[in-house]
Length: 193
DNA sequence: CGGCTTTGACCTGCGC
DNA sequence: GCGCAGGTCAAAGCCG
Picture 1 (cartoon, rainbow, N blue to C red):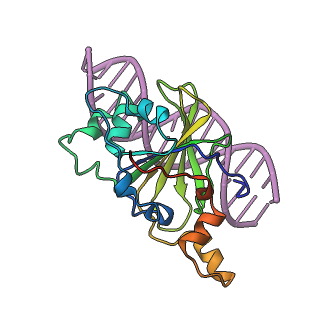
Picture 2: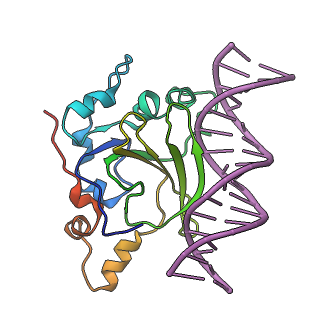
């Protein structure tokens, strides 16, 4: 992971909650929620035609785009829906040459799988901080390999290492700092029309 | 030497 | 019950 690398500006958020990550909190996600056509229209396609940054619910993401096959169990409350309550899940679609975005946290890879409907491999990461069970999946967009889909699952129970780093440097952490030093500086937010 | 990646095996859930 | 697909584990190897 090279912090100096940043994904290019075209980023799509699929968000069910924006409270997990400080940068998301900064982006007023709730006001940027885009509806997704649950009637079968692929919302993502609409996103691509529209502004490069947009948000849909995480459920819609997994159902309409992420996993066409197994998503049913998650999209509609199955009998053990409580088990599936994994916490917050946020998917970020990034146009980037690199697979792994530097989001300020330290991740440890624990798996790699080829998945159906995607010729590219999906990588599985866990937060390497002790006691933090946050996971993330990283895969290339099957239809446009220029895009990387990163799905975060869970909530960090600790501060971002970047956060600590800036504090150590005597810099007061705020959203401006975050945006300056992370990939987020490349994210452009377009208000809904 | 410690931490991380790789990779095949294993587990689980779901549809037929 | 069986097969498939997604997700996770863990041993081995790699690298700084």
